[in-house]
Amino acid sequence: MGNRNSAQSGDRDPLMDSKEKEMEDLPLFEELNLVVIGIHCAGKNEVANAILQKKALRVWGTFCNFHIKNSGETCNRKIKVFRAPGWSGDLHTEVDKQKQTKKQIVYSVQSHFEEGPHAVLLALDVDSTITDTTIKTLENLLTQELWDHTVVMFTHGEKLKDITINDQIKVNQLQKFIERCGKRYYILKKKSTWRKQSSELVETIEYFIASKDASVQFCLSDREGAETNDLNQKKSLIKRLKNKINKAQRIYKYTVLKQDPG
Image (cartoon, rainbow, N blue to C red; front, side, top):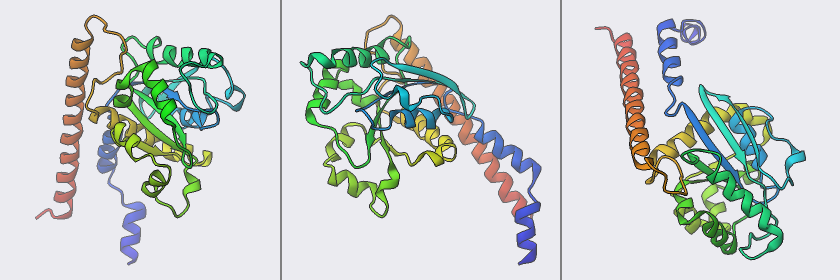
């Protein structure tokens, strides 16, 4: 028993550490462009801060009528996050007082990135829902293709306690909506876990982007060369995935040979 504990604590193979570090340092995307949307107090700032691994967005901007942007390097990726302003209650197509909010939502998605964002992150408190009116309004603003690029970010996940997220989704009658979003969702817990969750969160978003049945980036307008650019991005993504698989296989073989040299 003593030898086993000693091996776990002090006999780490430097080469193995190097190989594991190499795996961790190989992101699927060198750059990620993300837009966060959601109702007031849904946790949009927390989503952005968890991704950027810092207090990039603060409470004072919660009710700001304009988008807020920040960027940083997280887990060896350059990440840009744009937080669109929130809305109160339902987001209506015809409500004049929401005109600026709706304009800023479209602006955040359409105008900041040459080829569009890689994903739209919808912040949603884990014990709340999204109404049909809001869904319809967002579709009118951003087309139904929005849901092909949406990741639902369930915030305040600590509220779940002993309830599973699947049960909570049923309680909130979100099954069909989650289906429309390709079952792409993530549970974000309280602020104290930002740094712990950041790596897993970013990698999960990467996986969702890579696996979605749509273009790599969400481009609202038909820009010249968009299809060629998307094809090139997918080729690059496939190459990076192959590299990850090859490195994982090498690490596995190395581990097996070390354990059983005979």
